[in-house]
Amino acid sequence: MAAMLLDGFNHVAVLTADTDRLIAFYTEMFGAEVDGELRPDDGMRLTFLKIGTSAELNVFEIAGNGEAARQTPIFGRGRLDHLALQAASIEAFDEIRDRLMKRGASDGFVTDFGPVLSLFFQDPDGLEAEVCVPNPDARPGVMNPPGTPAARYQ
Image 1 (cartoon, one colour):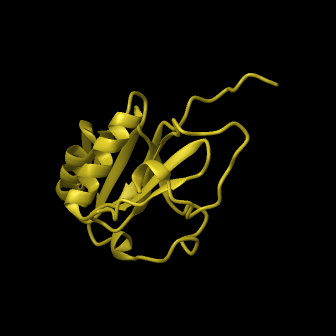
Image 2: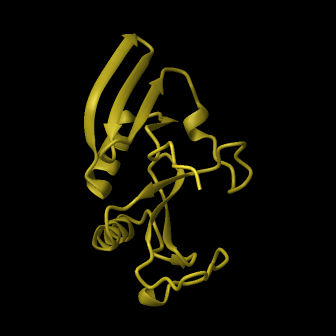
């Protein structure tokens, strides 16, 4: 097998109508940090929000752009449907899950995909996303369909 040439994502660009609210959410839920900001003109604000060692959200707030308010159901969102964040550990995953549930951003349901555990949430702009972590209870070769409840969270 050839060596993998990539090491995850560098950034995901998102649109928001309220940069400060979005930053507060990702900071409170995930410990994100602002890594810089550009305001190239009066109608645009671009904030670099560090969400991992080498990953960030590029948060665009553009005057008059209403795309952040437009919501569609899963698999009806075009080519890019949602983003998935990688938890640093199962302990971090559990902490994130608790925070998201307290905030009302997730119902706390954890899917057991076999090798990966997954938790969906919505950010303040309604962006549906998930947090994933390697499944410590995984059995080699076993993969489960979406909606399979993780036994450790029942």
